Each structure stands twice: as C-alpha cells, then as structure tokens.
Length: 386
Ligand SMILES: *Cc1c(COP(=O)(O)O)cnc(C)c1O
Picture (tube, rainbow, N blue to C red):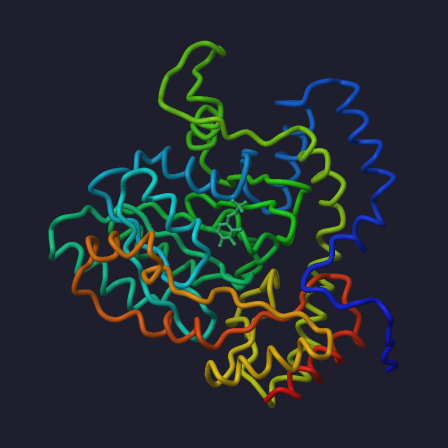
C-alpha cells in the first residue's frame, strides 16, 4: 500500500475540497433560484425534503431553519412546556438543553456512557424514577443525541419511552447518515432532528435543518409550526408557531451536496479505520457498538487526563495539526443551566462520566477529503505529545 503525502494543510473540517467538485452545478442551481425569485418555499425545498426522507428511510422530512429549530418545532408539536421534564445527556452541544428551557420545560441531565459517549440507559431509568418519586415534574420526553455520529442505543431508549408514555426525539445533528441494524437514523425515534450547519456530515452554506418522522400527523404539524402555526390557508393561524423555514437557496445547495453523501460517509468510515489502526494502541479510540454504523461527524479519542490532553494539543499545534474539544464543560455546569439542573433533580446522582469526559476528550481532523498521509501525520503528532 502506498501512503501518499500531500502539501495540503490539514484542517478539522474541509468545505473547500467538496465545493470544488460541485461548484459549477451549484452556480447553476443558485442562479435558477435567483431567476425564479422564490426565495422562501421554492420548489427546491420540497425536492430536498423528498430526497432527505428517501436517504434516511423516513416517510416524511420537513425542512427547517436550523438544527436547533428542528428540536424546538418537534417539542412544540408535543406541547412540551412548564411542568415537563425532558431527559437529555449532560455531555452534548448546548442546543439540546436550550430548547426545553426556551419552551418553559425543565431539562433533566442524564449521564453518558464512556463507551460510545451517549446517554447511559441505566442512569436514564434511575433519573426517570427519581423524577416520578419527587412528583414535581411530568416525565415527557427523552432526547437521545448521537454524539460525534455514533448512534445512541435507540432500541433501549424507545423501550423506555413506550413504557413511560414519553416522546422519543433523536438529536441526530452530528449523525446524518449513521445507522443501526442496517436502518439509518431518521426513522428510529418518533422524530429526528437534523442540522445542516456547514460542518455537519451534510451541511449547507449557512443555517438549515430538517425534521424526519414516519408520522404523517406530526409532519403536518411541523409544516404548520415552521410557518407561524398557519392552518389550511396562509392567513389562518391555528396555533402558536414560529418562523422556522429552510431557505430555498440552502435547499438548492443541499441538492448539490446530497448526491455526494453516500461516498463521503464511506470515506469517513475509511478514515476512522486509518485512525484506529494507528492510535488504538496509544489512546482510547471511538468504537461502534455491534450493529451500529457511525456517521463519523467527528473523530474523538479519550486521553488519560487533562494534563495529557494539554500536552497532546500543544504537540499537535506545534506540528500544524488542529484539534478541538467538544465539549470542555458538561451542560449542568454551564451558568445558563445550573439553576434548571438544581430545580429539576436537586439530589440526583453525580454526572461523573460527563464531567470526566469533558476533561479528556479530543477531536481530531475529520472530513471526507483527508488522505492516508494526512491521517498518519495527525496520529504521529498526537502520539508525540503523549
Ligand atoms: C449542531 C448541533 C445542534 C444545533 O444545530 P444548529 O443547526 O447549529 O442549530 C444541535 N445538537 C447537536 C448535538 C449539534 O451538534
């Protein structure tokens, strides 16, 4: 096997290499939108919705303005609000916790498992029981996050949600393209939120998102909620909604990018394999649970402690290799969420794995256009800092 070395700088994400492949088509598609003037609700929105649903194996897709708005619209449709407990991991991006709070509900933080980074099923059960015993909040929803692209344990989450009458929402913002038991994320939970933020596995050139579901009634509600709660006609307002639409230009960009996604996911898997080969003897590398296919939105290793991580980051930086920490602080320690955490489950068990991972995780460059020489250079730089 030949290892190609290149002079291309190594970046965490690379949107330029991909853009070069589709630039001409993109210019044509954007020009078409400019000519049509249908900047909102143009035909490209419907077209991309159909293609997203088909790709994920979900019956319906509703384009929205961001991943955060996807989460919000999905929760608004369930009328989640004051008095409701929404269970979600303490180790995730802020948007997952922000949305229940914006709606007046209470996020209840759940610990994650070190193996796979996702919501710890035993801890989830424990906290649902505690909230019920406390009797202040109604357990209403579980938001499972497929962190870094690694699918959460959806069969287990769904079993709990069914038993408790709770809504199962998949925050797949980092995981579009991932699968479990051969079935892509998108039809596992009651609803699945996607983000098309530029660095996600499918990104547009601005903000965008979508909600996937198999439930036709929910899909119709999402369409209404993203357009101010409109009814059958434009000026009939049936419910309180929001302005949460996907722009036509972003839909056109997604239509150019979607045909590349299958191949890009295969590249990400190949790159993850190269990393594992070179790093598994030195650090804890991410592993897919049996039956799970990661979308490899990020490639995140676990180091022994914070001091080692500091050293490794410095060594990498010195060699011109970027790295990043997703996330340096668990959500229950964030100033914005501390009060909600105290109100939700004041005497809950410590979120020790979430706290510990924040000190030890490190994300390495991950995008479909890394070559094996670059992966080797990243691995060597990391090892040099150990
Ligand atoms: C990116 C992200 C979001 C939010 O998506 P936006 O499109 O930026 O609003 C939500 N949850 C997770 C886990 C994310 O990574």
